[in-house]
Amino acid sequence: MFFEHKLLIFLIIVEIILIILNIYTSSFEDNTDIKIDIVYTWVNGKDQKWKDKKYQITGIKSDGDKRVENVDEIKYSLMSVFKYAPWVNNIYIVVDDLQKPDFDFGSKIKIIKHSEIIETKYLPTYNSFVIEANIHHIPDLSENFLYFNDDMFLGNYISKEDILDNVYGQYTLLSDINNSYDIANVKNYKMLKSRFPKIKQFLPWHEALICKRSLMYDLENMFQFDFKELCKNKTRRKDSDKLSKQEDFWMIGLQQMYGLYNGDYILKNDLSNIFVEMYDKKEIYKLDDIIKTKPKFFCLNNIQNVNDTLDFFNLFLTTLNINNSSFENKKDNSKIIILN
Image (tube, rainbow, N blue to C red):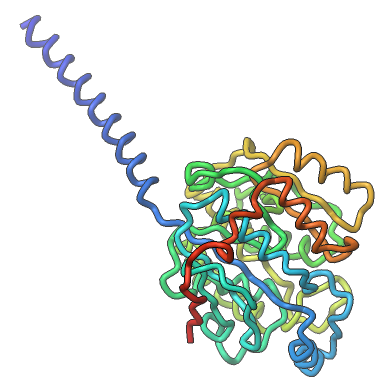
């Protein structure tokens, strides 16, 4: 009887160990097989046809608008991706129907027009929140994907394990709300708190952000009224803008806050990240920090204000040793795929 009891305990322990090993190995295998795409939103604010159309629709001139000025920073961002995240599956660049980038980095890149993902009745749109709220409609987009602005870069090698199911930022209550980005983040919190009273307000780092397509579809269905009202706003809402019926929300941050609450994401803060506000002379010293520390993510915000921008980029990214990663220099004859 004693022997049978010990044998039973032994078999139970062995079974537990086998279950743990199976979970571990399955998780590892799944991570290696999981496809992760990248989505960029991009606009060439120097395009006169685009500017004329925007003025005709909104009455707003784009000259001097920091958010849409283009100095080809997306080329350098893509170079950093090819260098430091070679495992990336597809790269989608979402553009206004009138535009497309004038470069070729190979078959991984696919151009997505606004009309392919946003209902025609809401077009044209000049509101980045509207565009971001619809990127999960991209055909064949992977469940897990990274969202990039064109001024976001990789400064070092990243792995799938760095980003898969991991979000980086902090729980905080915004008190100084003075721009459309803060307004949208507060709107995110109000929307989710109305359904989940115990949820905490979360503010992501300003870097490339992990997204889950299924979460975005869930939220679109959950907040159908807010989604439709957002899509009506042709431009981002500001404090003084009384024309919008409702404040914008930010789908990228919304799905991260929601995912943290329901356990789809884990909050971490161990990934190196540097944000530089380029128009602020007090922050320029951070460029040296990027070169010295090679953070995994960095963002150069408002870089069009830097003198001789192209020479700056060449010098800066040559120092980071990523300029040779360009697919333009490789024997890849495939062209950008335009999805109609």
